[in-house]
Amino acid sequence: MLIPLSNPDITEKEKSTVMQVLDSPDLALGPYLKKFEDSFSSYTGLKYALGVNSGTSALHIILRSMGFAKGHGMLTTPFTFVASANVAVYEHGDPVFIDIDPYNYNISIDKLNRFFEGTYRPSKNHIKTDFLMAVDVFSLPLDWDKIRIPSEIKVIEDSCEALGAEYKNKKAGTFGLAGAFAFYPNKQITTGEGGIIVTDDEGIYKAVKSMSNQGRGESGAWLEHVRLGYNYRMDEMSAALGYCQMTRLDEILDKRKSAADRYRKLFEGNSFFVCPTVPDYVTRESWFVYVVRINIAWISKLLGLPNWISTYQMPDIIEHKNREEWYTYLKKARTVLDSLLEKLSKKGVQARNYFSPVHLQKFYKDLYGYEEGDFPYTELTSCLTVAIPFFSNITLEQQEYVVKSITESALELQNEVHG
Image 1: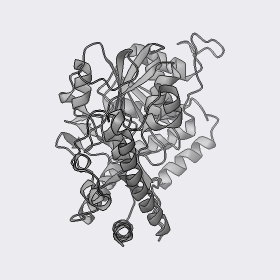
Image 2 (image 1 turned 180 degrees about the vertical axis):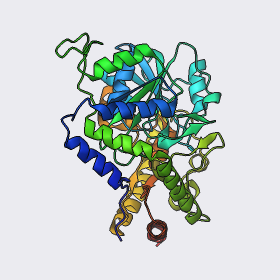
Image 3 (image 1 turned 30 degrees about the vertical axis):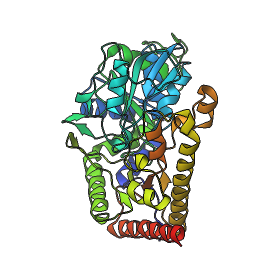
């Protein structure tokens, strides 16, 4: 059996609508783009929505519209898709990383609040930090009521993975000055490639609308440009696909929740892996991927990891005198992870590690001098997390095979280590 990591939920309705667009003269800036944007304004309850060609583009021009530039710092997590941080570098500013909570994988609220108080300073960049890129990792909203955000901090909500999620009955993407969603084929809904910006701020909306369309002014005159802009427009075929998907959003979210619930039951009693948990503050679940974590107790026993790792008692930063030892532990854990992924591949189960630490990407290490030990919770979590096949129409039979295969693979690893 071959089971893909993801598979978009496309029906004949979507196909028919896209074909109608292809039979029309409106392949860009047509009526479906407005319908798609209006569907997001209605869904989020925000005044403005702007479709663009990717979630990355959305985050970029939101940040630029707020005046982020050289000399500015943007707080974010190192455990995310690299675009969440890259957009700061695009504008010649700096991402300022805050380590994560090892249980929910979002930015650590404790460390974030301590940063605001001046008692947590892991960053190598001692610059003015007045922007926060708040990422809803794996579709889980932040616990917003616990964050003590100073008034001068400008918040962008990166909800690219969290369409449909709700925090205390308020929709993800609506907690900052602007929010962004993305629609890659593994997301809740897809436009192939695409993203959208939502905001209540008229100034932000006018700026991002202009920047997404080559910097054109409000008049829309064809060759008149009032600012530096980009070709970040969403095409009409993508918008038509997205609009149809939005009419089915509740159905899609329900199917994905059912699939997540089935996985949770199938993994009950499994000592090798820990399933994601949903806090009480989440009043609507929205599943992007299904990421299981290798049980820290099991892998610690397997590899002989020390108690301060197995109980998540790492310091904020690993001291330099201990970094070689820390790197050795990470390397051992990564070897187990890589072996697990290889075994799953041979069994026909696509699986991926989510995420690789942003600060340890080569160009970030080259640019800022980051090393293993700078953000220990992110680094360890990255060695333990596995995204397994997950999509709206995954069957119980497929899920049973996935759980059987990953459990068998863990047993094989255990036997190989212990002989």
